[in-house]
Length: 355
Image (cartoon, rainbow, N blue to C red):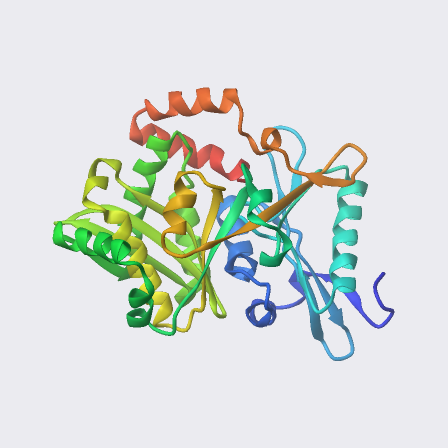
């Protein structure tokens, strides 16, 4: 129930700076909550922004935000998602009452328009024990030291030697946000996605991300001589950073490009006021989870929910998330396709895949 002196309004009634100021100061915010993510989705993929804001009208004070996208599907009904293409997209508010009011508002919108709705929450670190995480999707979070020198010293000797291995193998790294780095990032990313059997985002998606996030987006590319063989892109908000995309060219993995890539981004964050690094989604105790854990990251459960037939929220199961025999078959076929085709085809279908 919303207090009488407050009002829920569409995001378009406030400007991006107001939205981002609220997000950057909120303790539970992620970089995905920033206006840049919403603007990139709308601009690159022509979906609709259904985000809402709780305001106190007389003072114009923002007391809560709930990012949400209406995904316009080429076949079938549109659907709501908070948020597509990322791990966490739930609302932020001054208190639980306001957060609940915004959830109820959007749930009612989905019900009235007969559209499905998916929300992507994250648990708190204290809300689970590790035994409950087996087989589940988790975020991997790392508290960063105050600078890169202290951070490096905190790593185990085996981890430091793996970073040095990449350097001894003649690899170098460049960090920034230039058009050239973005081009090199996309070349590595598109090869890696093809090899994983997954459709790529369109290049324009990353162009919009870098444009709308500005200096809050940072690209890092690892090179063997002049060839880009590893690449990642981080997003920042307040004292938090996340890495939605990191890729390597598998033919060069023996040279440890991933170690130098991640170290370059962690060092950048530690030296630039970031105190929490989100390594992103993994399945508990599987390969990517173990890679992230070696850096010292700890798991936090993801709690994704979607509406069922009577428009109540229920957990997203593995079947709904797309882990199936059919998916494995499609992935195996995709891996065998020419790279140029997977880039073109992927850019066509990827806007309609919310994962």
